[in-house]
Image (cartoon, rainbow, N blue to C red):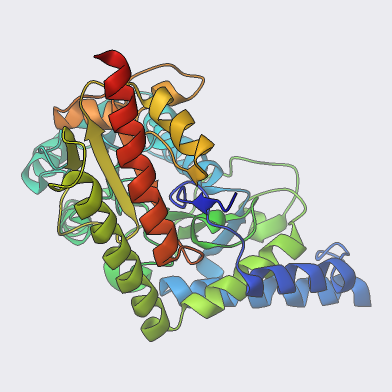
Length: 376
């Protein structure tokens, strides 16, 4: 059976450039980059080359890049570091990723800001929260479940004017949208390598020059004493290679347009008149991440839909956490005021083909029709 992988919002398959760089570094850059012998210096050169390439992709200088194992680690570093450095609550939106919601809650008071029915954070509500003089505002670039982009530039500007730190969770934006960290003016930005086709186990925290936070991991002076632990040089070499590919704005824009076109085609097929009915597109239909489609499916539990799709060769995910070990409704969808227990997320990437979209549309429609027939 030919399978179609449509869970790219979770993890994008490793791009060939990343694979090649990783394999090369496994053979040629396997020493500790903190040593001054030839082998160590070779590893250091590989690591710093990757840092420079990632910095170029996100619009900053290499000295602002702190390599981490994932975006969740970067976010945990922000939540803990800010709590130790500044007094005040941490502001989050009701649709932030669980790494932000739980990370902030672990370190003191949290001010939660609601969203509109599309999942967008109202800027005026952030302005109200800033009157409480919080320590930091966390805001995602684009939502991980419904794809809605947030008014990041406006929120960052408000924070700068108020002298409040601002952290941007850009896990669903880096590699797809153009991000210029230095021009944006944010203080911190977290990202995940596997979200745009780099090796698993890679992430980064981008830190504004001059800002210093107590590190989450201690025990060594790696990453300019900002994150202890031996760096996974081969994996970061792969990250740098992928970042270099995606730094080509024209190529990245072409890929994003292709993703958006495929998502729109899929949405039309399952939500339109030829679909089984009762399937509604969620999130903002226009200002959204190009690769994510989230739909609500009336009256059908997500586990049954996911299993049916998998049997037909379609890898997908439910926007609801009840498709995972947590067995809880999606807080994102609940905050939007829609059914938090019955949704489906399909997301495309660089490996997705038109045939995958056609197969997915047929499978979704067939599975939903079959499940409804069983219920009746």
